[in-house]
Length: 223
Ligand SMILES: O=C(CO)[C@H](O)[C@H](O)COP(=O)(O)O
Image 1 (cartoon, rainbow, N blue to C red):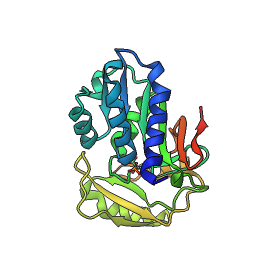
Image 2 (cartoon, protein in one colour):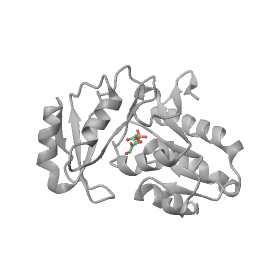
Image 3 (cartoon, helix red, strand yellow):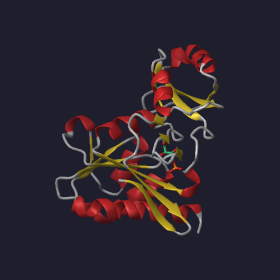
């Protein structure tokens, strides 16, 4: 099975989880990236079963709209039962690293609002310890050097992601070589640096359910 087939299988598994719980008033939070794109394309086949979606990025909003799925502003939504998104890494506690696609801030906001965060990923994303994937940090552009110096004090090696501006007009620092044995603490420490918008650790609010695509089928971890 190819990695894309594994991604498609977990996207379908997420549809199978949410579909019985949707009605014509339901709005679904939708993430960003190649796995989320498989989910969007499958979700489009059921667009009569729900009202619309909230998007975690402009790219996702465009893809949803291209399928004729209405996209709502999060501020106009009072209830979001599900958020479905991929990840760059997950540990067994469903703490994640996200932001490989630079959408981490909006992803974290939608995840915070949703009652159930379903993470969909192929088996390569499950790791014993977070941090092999460099941790993305969204930073206000004028604070770039200051934040980089503080990240070095935390033991990391920040690298400016050349040519990338987030949907919020900010830059990304990818932090290599961090020792992430306490994800909740490190998430807080990095977010406390002035100039940081947020970082890609999803530990204070981990996923509720991880659907992991493996060659032996889709495995469920969590709820
Ligand atoms: O956090 C993300 C985007 O900011 C994505 O969920 C993450 O990068 C995984 O992407 P993919 O499904 O393409 O492997």
